[in-house]
Length: 363
Image (cartoon, rainbow, N blue to C red; front, side, top):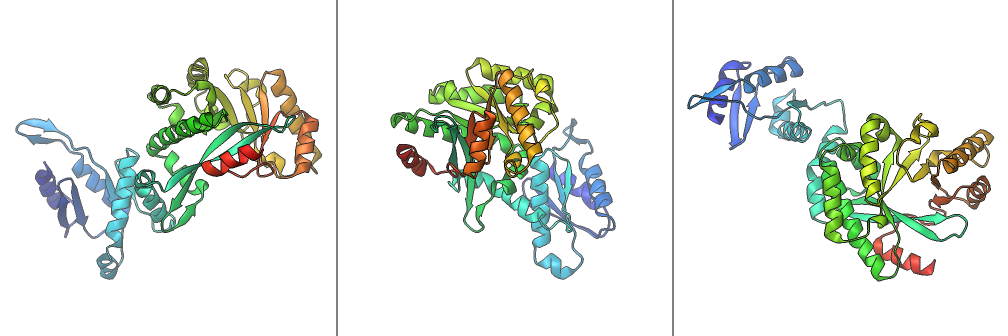
């Protein structure tokens, strides 16, 4: 099959060209280009054609990555080949027929490199979890934790989550990541239980996770494997995730609720949904976005928005947690407004497993 494709490409794409087979599933094409998109589509037209092997009609499952260079010197540096390879991997990961490397986007190479090395990062313990405490504002006791991933890259150092998480959420890697986070969280929960610190831990679930038909079954299978009470795992989803597919969201979240897993609505206030509309979803806790905490002490309008959010949330039966608390003034105000719980650097930064156990003993 690959030899037939080799001949077709030689005969049907721009001349002159050089087609090279580098291994048993990859072909490289070197050719002059006029318009990168049109040239990519012409290659795709050839690759996607039906072929007969022993009178059996077959189609090739393929992904194409293309990039351009303007001089022979650039070509000999091999960076063009690397760019094409990374772009092809991006197309393959995202089930795309092709992807084109855009030289104007300086971040592209770095992003693809991060994606291509992320699985290895998981396997080689470059990634790890930290945990941020959630505090009861009345008693000042720790009532739960949020699990957060960190990536200590051997060359780039600590990569911020807002750099790599959005990239991973665009691909199927998010399923592997979320499964890994759940496994690691449950393993740590058993350590906490052994030290008599039985605290629920919440993990973040993306839209791609939630609407994956296999997600619920895979999640519950991991829970059963670890034999940890479902009451000790919460899932956090964003308002925007709910709004993508409202009816499907309700059904899926109710399945988790039926298992005893609580649902927290993260970053509330970033979107445009009303609490009255959100009342139809099986939610346990509303987490008010940290944006409102930045100026709440001095901004009367924000105070009233937060006051109304807390009041209506309680009438609907939700707990309310404020994120991003950094000062005692904000804490005092939230207590006056009737907020239940808080989370932020005022109490503790995200802590490693060992540091958290020490922190819990002291607190």
